[in-house]
Length: 436
Image 1: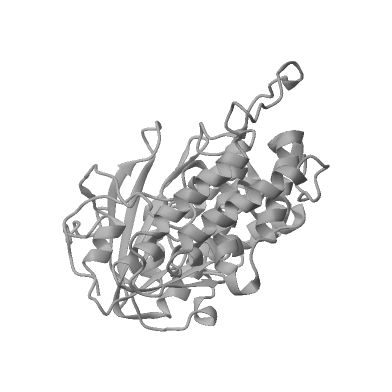
Image 2: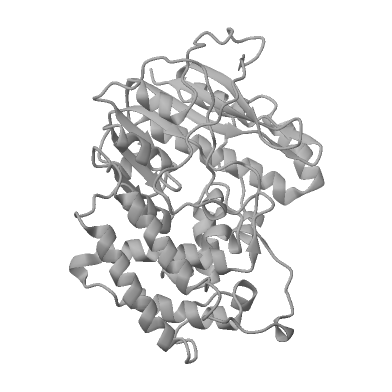
């Protein structure tokens, strides 16, 4: 079990942040500094009694018993998994996206001595061969719709040659080298892409007329593909020379609504997670370039179907499937104002009303599922954010607390941790609950 600690804050690490930060480093920012007071659930609930609930992922984990078994059911980039294993805690994580499962597993891997020196040598050989190969037409490109919006012709030729070299660089006995080189390749992908991250979601930059510009002069200027790849490999080498995880973490590919079917234990003592927010953001959208290049996606239909399986997904065919979706729970969501909230949203946009309804049906299924894999008195910490649809505020944190109580959890509490955006109504919260 986790013991109590001082009240602090948690930094939400949404999946889309993966592409807008230096995700290739093994260490992720775990906390922010602002402390705010607890918020009671409502007039019918007792005041926030456990004021010592730990707020950051690191503090929650630091105050766990050494024999704790941690569960992260929405792993994303594997931040909690990595933090737990670095502290010597056992941790199992779940994600429905196979690319993120691969990434998280790599982040908690142990590498043989000398790996940094080896991958830097291999990287130089790859770049040398790729320079010669790139003078020809691109050998292979992923089937990304309008790929030229992402990269220009010259960049695509280089990326294709570089990717060929990465994939043929190591034999099956040294697959860890290929995985590390693929991480470096992913960094080059995003740093050479025609995209920007000035908003919470990715957008394409305005095109510059390159016809009037000189071609890259490799004799005088760093090349964003070749030199960018070598730089990324060097950074990765420095990262894995540091402290390795003290325990072996485990990440499972699967649906967090069906945890008993995929997890190896029924006695988790702590749950730390930040589920997808109900904010209409497609998480697959930001990850598609990596997933296409690395072979996790081959068609747009696959991307939409994966987003449909994910909680809160809206990409591609997920939207058309949502258009025919109907609520399946006869008893409804156990939060008294819920139907009125959905009705108000539906009056402005029927599809968004369905989106909100389906999101909480899925979360309800998840919460009932997670209860069945917990030890008695297990503690759950869910970082969530409220949302606003038109002029209707969606009290996500209160609905989560109601869903926990409906599933039989006790001592549910809500703590405000920080403001989310420039909109004064939007905050992030920790919803806390204990298994009976």
